[in-house]
Image (cartoon, rainbow, N blue to C red; front, side, top):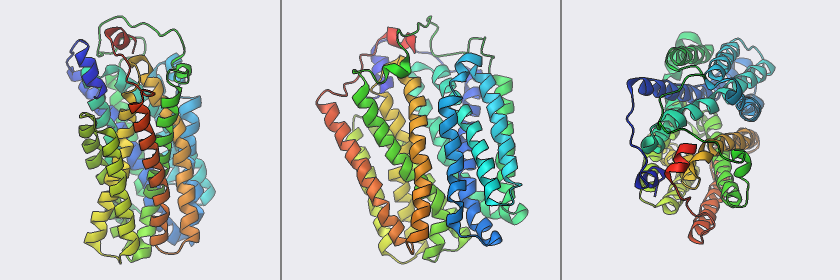
Length: 429
């Protein structure tokens, strides 16, 4: 059963959302939406910049990975500073860094400039977003935490879908640079909302418990690797990293790859958004099934759905309607799993380890997010057409299925037993 069900069964206080809390959660979700839009902007810009500059699309592989490198480094090195200096302060200053670097991307006139600006964007997002996630986990009522986290995480693919839908009219008005200007402006709006609404780090945030919180005896990050949690931590991180590799390989190269199959560039930009829209649909479907204890069969079924879509595009000639449906199926399986994996992992940890698990997952899975676009760039440069790329993507899909089956076996044998969730654990969260 899902974590919030286990909590309710153990008698946690049922709290209500205040208007201020709802407003803060809205702007936190808005920030996640911007990450999705920002991450999608560069892949959508590559076909146009490539044509303008006379560079092969594969030359932009490092530009696509630079933002992810920055996110990975900052989530480990800078994001924890939010505990020392206050999460609100970290969100504001690092969010402004991300906005400034996004504006800077619009001024780039060579590939090296793209790499530098995207790296700085990633540093800002990597320091900011874990603190946003931690704030959501803190202020969400305990009995609604899993559902609220699912909604907030879904904002990322919503941002990517939005970028795919607006790219054609935006580019006609302001060229590819307008994508980054819009992303920067939206970031500033989100920062302004959080500045107004979030209390300072000295103030108590309206939260899910009025009980005094106690600190665990050991460092939560260290505790994740103690014998009681080590195996499940490694298995969950393995699944999450492989899925992240796959999703970023697809997100970053679909707008460039699909025109090779005969699809117009603007159509490719719009239809690539179906991959992320499938993630929105799939994410809620996965969450619904997780609530009913059907985790393993749902993940396996989702990945098989994605595999069928990949094979379908590989073996069929371009057809707008058919490929749209296949892209949707791929998104349901891969992007939907991406949303659900963190929520799935939260089932296996006591409350005081949830934030540390989410933060560690963000940091570690960035290795997959970095390697995915690089691997996709290699495939685009060395494999002709669409089919080879799609068939190669079956390899990480198979690895994801293997991780899920191993986790299912570990759960059945008691290696990944659910924690005993008590009110004391909730108070320590």
